[in-house]
Image 1: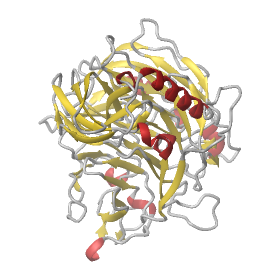
Image 2 (image 1 turned 180 degrees about the vertical axis):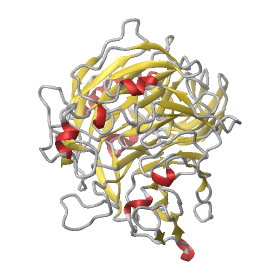
Image 3 (image 1 turned 45 degrees about the horizontal axis):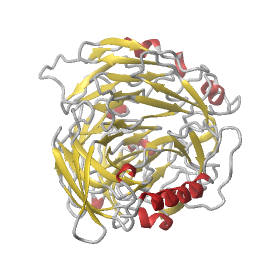
Image 4 (image 1 turned 180 degrees about the horizontal axis):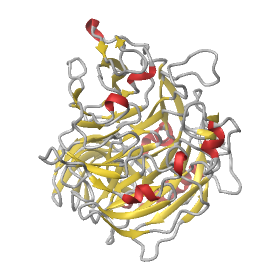
Length: 552
């Protein structure tokens, strides 16, 4: 361990190096040295990754929709699907879902029967993905995928007509008891719980807030932003309005001021949103959200009627939900963006990736792809403009955080069917990985490496992590974080969540550069619902790779 004087010198140097990337809202400063990078992992996975979910075995399940037409990947073993309801191909021997192995950078086809277009999902505490709704014959279907080894033959299991209502453009959230709430959908002003009660008469529960926030034919309240709060209630944002909602009693507990500016933030004026990390190391638990981007109210009808493509929204709003008098604090992104994807990085910074600079979501409704992500630093309240991707990713693109700290990016199909020729923005079947600056070799000396860790963490119970690090600075610069992997589609990462756990002690072990952490599990299931999380150590702003733990 080095002394505090040397630690200050090292930290100062690191801050100076990184400060070149920090952008003030008024005077953006370009990078002097680019530490991030893009990599095309695969030129094609056969489908366009409209939906993505990272699973606890390191695989990522992806799917688009069955009525895009024939994909570029056949189902295995001569399998085909026959669907008399399909609007594109009734007899289809191609796949519309794949399982991607991050480590080997390979993929295999899966068989999904009913249409998954614009659907939603959550992962149960046991690691099984529950996927809900879609279009046409899939609008009331529930589907399950239980992770298995890459060489095994696990596949989708479907339950047609399981859901109480049509769920097309709905949002899911895992609850403290391990159930899932499914909210909204096109012309669905209600919610339901999965698994459903043992009653064939169950039709869900009314939710008039969704009716109130609809902009007529433009809607602008689909895929509402939904978060489980530490008090057990839900935060719901739709269009420009937001509330705290007690789903158990079906009542609004609190309504917040409208986000300033009047621009809608939900589909099809698709902005994005995150819940900032919940910090158990502080004496008072605070909850704060952020909403970024979107499109003006007239953007969708203008694009639809070919009157032009309105400039996307460039503002973000932060709202501290636990404040006695919450007000929106507005900030300006360096690049206007609609259909961006916001993800929490292990450091607690926010990446905004994908999207367009003009127009809205929908077929052929956008222009000016935004190929440069930005990273938002919550403490400094500043944005960094990052390196440029070689691929345009707009409508129907997606992104998820990987355990190694990279961001997996895929999808983009602004066309009714797969379309690769004679169009401005062809259907994208490729996969890319984005490596943020913290993965640069220049940070290797202060990067922690998890050696062993408890695989199961219980609420309020002590657990241990053993790690090594070439140059440990100070315990004040070390934190333990768990991250729930997201189900990402249509500019929203459902169930995404980070909790900073209480660090009790760090002990230097006998081995060189080896240390042991004692920390406490989450306080409640409202703060961290049961299930699989990635655990990261972050030291001086540099994260370890994540390892899987199960919270129970």
